[in-house]
Length: 257
Image (tube, rainbow, N blue to C red; front, side):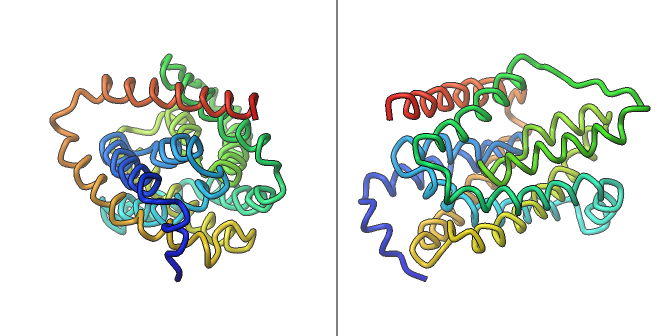
């Protein structure tokens, strides 16, 4: 593993990457998702967006494994059994669409990142909640999983659509955390394998991703501590507002080149 890329980026950019990773970890610890959205949307304003995708891979693997087993192994296994179809489609779509990342032109990739960030953050911000009739749940599960997996492979984020899916399926709040952890955990391992295959995570980029891991976990630990002291609704709204602005900035960069 080489850390030469840290010298290429320079101390200011690396400091920004470390700082935003801590912030993203705090948010994930507090509300359960949004780490990739935050890191990618901010880092892509300073570095090549494909390098930003590479940077998030190891932090989200580590943080999602921690989230998966925080409630214990038995609940994680039960969640996997109940939502196996969603998990299967998400992982397949992540692997397939991740192979497209290296061939997407840089300017277009700003749109690939920015559009989902803005739309998903806005949906969450206005409190839109899907309601799915029981007779439609079988195909809705496949469709939402396919969309989530495609976003995961291209932009590294399948959290917001997964939250919408669980709410639509009327999953109880405590159970949602465990199910999210399983879906994020298996999805992030798939993303790791997919981007080793695609070449996005390689000997040059893995150093940046590796150095972010302890900062992501520290942020998560701090987020767990804050969980009982925060107004979760206000904190979530503030986070989504910042993400919307960051996504709009990515769209601006794609427009002006």
